[in-house]
Length: 169
Image (cartoon, rainbow, N blue to C red; front, side, top):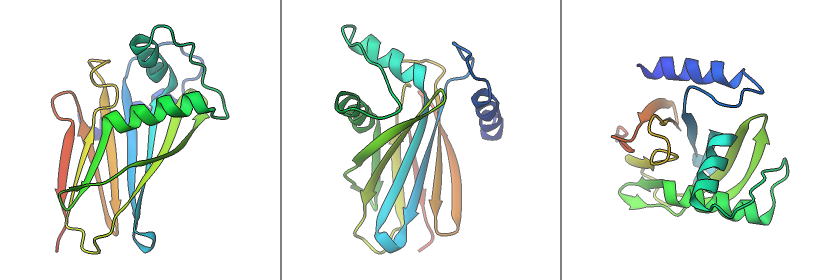
């Protein structure tokens, strides 16, 4: 199935509210370069129930309840989830990712994080994204990359958790 079909199915799925189980397991992550601030703003979206099920599976004694406003316990859990499953390298140097917070939008968990970059000449990016892949066999992760006038999308799966892209010098 093509990336376009996955995006379409994901959007259709977002429109269905109150539906306990969903047929498609997909997350989206936007990686946006903000050159004048030397930062990369990253936003990931997940179905809330998938993340809750993973956390409850990993920690059976957890009584996790996501609320509209984040709390310290949930922030620690989500930060750990991001740090374990998302890595970014610029010019072959791993960047430190800073978790900023999350919000709930209907049945979605939207997570915000960022990283700084200090090399003014960006010629290569590598992203590792394993969100929910080891927990849900059919999980797909779509990553959108926005750099200057370059917009690329990548589909990551259990067989391919990393993409690398080289920019024109």
